[in-house]
Amino acid sequence: MTEQQHRDHPRSGRARAVLAAVLTLAAGLAITGETALLLRNAAQRDAAARFSVSATQTAASVERSAQRYFDELGDVGAFVANDPGATQAQFRGYVEGAGLFTKLPSLVGVFYIARVEDQDLAAFVADAQRANPSFAVAEIGPRSPGSAHYLLTYYVPGRVDLALPIGTDVSAIPSVTGYLNASVPSGAGVVGSFQDDPYLKEIAKQTSFPMINRLLGLDFFIGVPVYARPVPAGQAPSEAPIGFVGGTVADFRDVAAAATEGLPEDLGLGMSIDLTRIGLDPDATFTVRDLITGGEFEWGRDNYVRLDAFGEPAHILHVQTPAAPTKGR
Image (cartoon, rainbow, N blue to C red; front, top):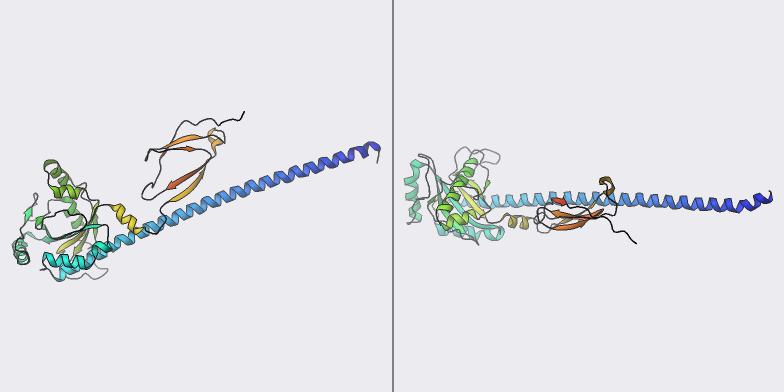
């Protein structure tokens, strides 16, 4: 080895060492970056999976809760079918004894509407007056000639008293007769709402009838058809119902809250945005405004989104003018 080669050898050794260190560092950074990406993707997949599972659990819980309402009201219907001459006090005793307002805390009232053909009205009123001498039919609107009457026969208020008069003929209320008639062919229970009923809204404009205003304030009602004879499971009814047992619910959120008790109340999801793809610096920040709640948030590359089935089930975000990133001096 020449003297010049001897002097250059340490330099080449150091160069190779530096190169090896740089390559090792680069490889380490690449692995670290890839690992971080994998972890982030895994975390996002896990969050999405947990959200999907929770959403499925919530839907199933609400469905089970709704079915319980139908089942419990169906039992009330069986009581009426077995004892059609029951007094108002006996009906109230059954409802309260069964603990309906405890089992179904969202329920604010239970009622029974008898479906009476026009030609049978006089006989029905005579039978009703034996149990309740003051029973009288009170029509609240026009009814198609020859059509069936829908008479409020029993009513038990819960924590909200709608002051529904016994004997009221609700045939003129489309939201009642329409939904109830829809259940006749199948015998299935129905869910309806008073809030968009055109007849009730018109009455509310022209009068100050407290019962109408209370009905319009309810979220929905549940109706279960009642038959004189039991309908075999899986079969369509062979005869028209003798009436409908109904339950009024003031606020659906009460049903959902009771059904999802014990489930996660909210979910958080991480959201990362590649700002360079929209021409922004990776460290840029910008303001987003939630068009649903009106809230404003500072966003950037990595963000957090909270979803709550009852408070914030969705977000519609409007992006404000992005701000330039702050540069150090």
